[in-house]
Image (cartoon, rainbow, N blue to C red; front, side, top):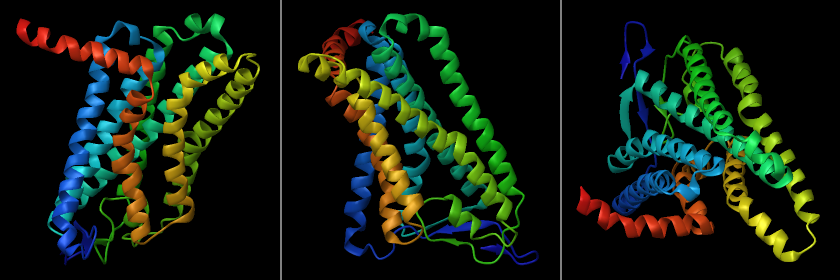
Length: 312
């Protein structure tokens, strides 16, 4: 598993979930089902929004980007996890471990930024409706999305390049089902102080600042909604941002539970599954089931599928 000459870790052993025994096959099938539904659900969101002209608005444009991010996260984590569960562990080259961590980190950071842009969109729509179309035009939306994608992948690449300069030796076992930050650093025999410091610094622009922007946006949104005189008007206005608020709560709630309160153990593995496996599954469900416009667009899209197939 290691290079004996330099004692450098060249392969990683992911332990995953040990002692599954009789639950291994049912757990594998459940994960496979979740993966298939996640990919299909997010692809369906992308296709419905692209097809329906009524959904050609900034909010749904950002939603398609969120679906791309969820697909990226799911394909980064779940296929490898299926192998880990089925064979009760997996050995993979160390470079593959870094690549998985790269795409995992990039997709998580991207989701954080996209949720922030979506909260700004809801703020403009509710608090500044008269200037909404001029502020949230196509050019602004396109630039915002491109900035999110480029910034996350460029900064994450720099972070991974710094990590790759560390020396990794000794044990090559990671007691997790994917390559996360803390488990990788535990394999290093170098001084990881500056690596941890860089991680803390990058937390500000990709986690803390986006979270603060979202909170401030929703404070203004709630204040504006409370000023609406009719109960029906307040409910109708709030319904336009309820899906986004649910996704934000799901995303940041799980991250806080894991990285602030839980560091190791099986409980962290289970909660890690929540934001790497379950959240990409729930996001399209939240937006499709609780959004009247999405449900209407889906019905129209569904009714047009036979005619499209006949033409093709």
